[in-house]
Structures are given as structure tokens and as C-alpha cells.
Length: 134
Image (cartoon, rainbow, N blue to C red; front, side, top):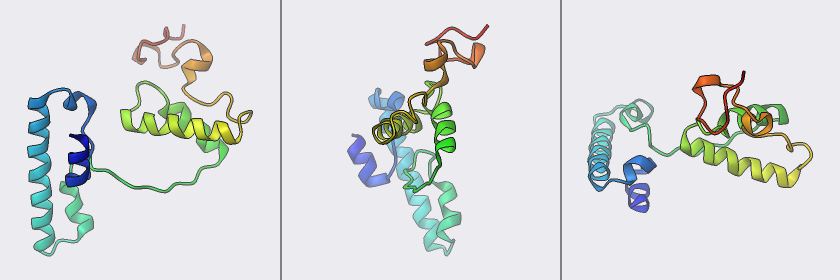
């Protein structure tokens, strides 16, 4: 079903929605309505940049970014955390694996801070994987 959504709507279905057929059908109806209204806005002469405001948050984005080592560490610190949104966490973990291949000693301590600390620096707001800091 994700391939259908990806190809027809250029969107992602969150895992929680994918688990339920009823939720998935509701999600697809919403995607369909958004796509229709987006096309209507374009046909009405609205710039694509402005018409995109109607698209769902789950619409895929292609991006290119550059980061230095310091920026990568910050990115991994924030986005490898279990509390980060699923897709960005998956991307961060894939990126971390790649930079560790290139410069293992440089990125040895990169990733979610709790993994290195043995406790969650977010205190009571943590995911529960590690105890909160004292």
C-alpha cells in the first residue's frame, strides 16, 4: 500500500496509520482531496509555491544538504533519539552508519546522547529506553 501512496500522492503513510485498514482508507481519501484541491488552485492561477500549502505534512520532500562535522554531531544528537519523528530518525541513523564507514574515529561518539551517557538527558520527557538523568 505504501508504494501506491508513494506513486500516486508522493506521500508517506505513518506506521500507526498503516496498521489499520480503516485508518489507511481515511488517509488515502484525505490525500486524494488535497491533491485535487492543489490541482484546482494551480488551474486557478495560484503559484505552485503558494498552492503547496494545501498539501499534507506527509508529502515527500527531496533535499540536498551540506553539514560539517559539528553540524552532523548536532543533527545526530537530536535526530537519532527515539523521540524524533520516525522518518527523520531513520534518515539520521542511515547517515550515521555512512559517516562511521568514512571516518569511524571521528563519529565514534555520535548518535543519540542517551546511548553514550547511559541515561536520558531529557529527564521525564525521555522515551523510557534509559532512566532519566538525576
